[in-house]
Length: 77
Image (cartoon, rainbow, N blue to C red; front, side):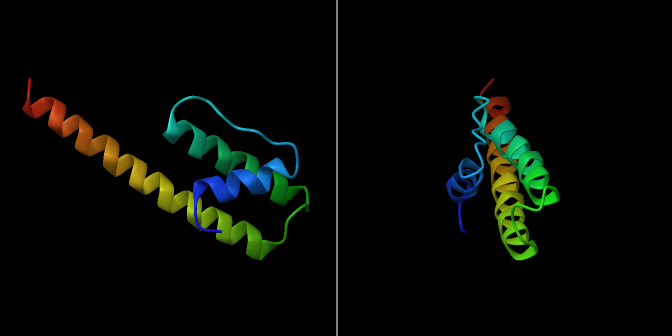
Protein backbone atom coordinates (compact mmCIF):
# COMPACT_ATOMS: atom_id res chain seq x y z
CA UNK A 1 0.00 0.00 0.00
CA UNK A 2 1.65 3.20 -1.19
CA UNK A 3 -0.94 5.82 -2.14
CA UNK A 4 -4.22 7.36 -1.04
CA UNK A 5 -5.84 5.49 -3.92
CA UNK A 6 -4.59 2.18 -2.49
CA UNK A 7 -6.14 2.98 0.91
CA UNK A 8 -9.40 4.00 -0.76
CA UNK A 9 -9.43 0.70 -2.66
CA UNK A 10 -8.99 -1.14 0.65
CA UNK A 11 -11.98 0.69 2.13
CA UNK A 12 -14.07 -0.02 -0.98
CA UNK A 13 -13.85 -3.71 -0.10
CA UNK A 14 -15.98 -2.86 2.94
CA UNK A 15 -18.43 -0.60 1.11
CA UNK A 16 -16.78 2.66 2.15
CA UNK A 17 -16.59 5.25 -0.64
CA UNK A 18 -15.17 8.70 0.09
CA UNK A 19 -15.26 11.81 -2.06
CA UNK A 20 -15.81 15.08 -0.23
CA UNK A 21 -14.40 17.27 -2.97
CA UNK A 22 -11.26 18.61 -1.33
CA UNK A 23 -8.26 16.27 -1.20
CA UNK A 24 -7.27 17.21 2.35
CA UNK A 25 -10.79 16.50 3.61
CA UNK A 26 -10.83 13.20 1.71
CA UNK A 27 -7.61 12.17 3.47
CA UNK A 28 -8.97 13.11 6.89
CA UNK A 29 -12.28 11.29 6.39
CA UNK A 30 -10.43 8.27 4.98
CA UNK A 31 -8.38 8.17 8.17
CA UNK A 32 -11.53 8.19 10.31
CA UNK A 33 -13.18 5.45 8.25
CA UNK A 34 -9.99 3.37 8.30
CA UNK A 35 -10.06 3.51 12.09
CA UNK A 36 -13.70 2.37 12.13
CA UNK A 37 -12.86 -0.59 9.87
CA UNK A 38 -9.94 -1.50 12.13
CA UNK A 39 -11.99 -1.15 15.33
CA UNK A 40 -14.62 -3.45 13.80
CA UNK A 41 -11.91 -6.10 13.41
CA UNK A 42 -12.13 -6.21 9.62
CA UNK A 43 -8.42 -5.56 9.06
CA UNK A 44 -5.39 -6.55 11.09
CA UNK A 45 -2.90 -4.26 12.79
CA UNK A 46 -0.24 -4.40 10.08
CA UNK A 47 -2.68 -3.39 7.33
CA UNK A 48 -4.01 -0.61 9.55
CA UNK A 49 -0.52 0.71 10.34
CA UNK A 50 0.57 0.61 6.71
CA UNK A 51 -2.56 2.42 5.56
CA UNK A 52 -2.30 4.98 8.37
CA UNK A 53 1.31 5.74 7.44
CA UNK A 54 0.23 6.37 3.85
CA UNK A 55 -2.48 8.74 5.04
CA UNK A 56 -0.11 10.64 7.34
CA UNK A 57 2.34 11.04 4.46
CA UNK A 58 -0.35 12.16 2.02
CA UNK A 59 -1.75 14.62 4.59
CA UNK A 60 1.68 16.20 5.10
CA UNK A 61 2.20 16.52 1.35
CA UNK A 62 -1.20 18.13 0.91
CA UNK A 63 -0.63 20.59 3.76
CA UNK A 64 2.75 21.53 2.32
CA UNK A 65 1.26 22.05 -1.13
CA UNK A 66 -1.58 24.16 0.31
CA UNK A 67 0.90 26.25 2.31
CA UNK A 68 3.09 26.84 -0.75
CA UNK A 69 0.04 27.80 -2.80
CA UNK A 70 -1.01 30.32 -0.16
CA UNK A 71 2.50 31.81 -0.12
CA UNK A 72 2.39 32.27 -3.88
CA UNK A 73 -1.00 33.93 -3.71
CA UNK A 74 0.27 36.32 -1.04
CA UNK A 75 3.39 37.13 -3.05
CA UNK A 76 1.46 38.10 -6.17
CA UNK A 77 -1.27 40.21 -4.55
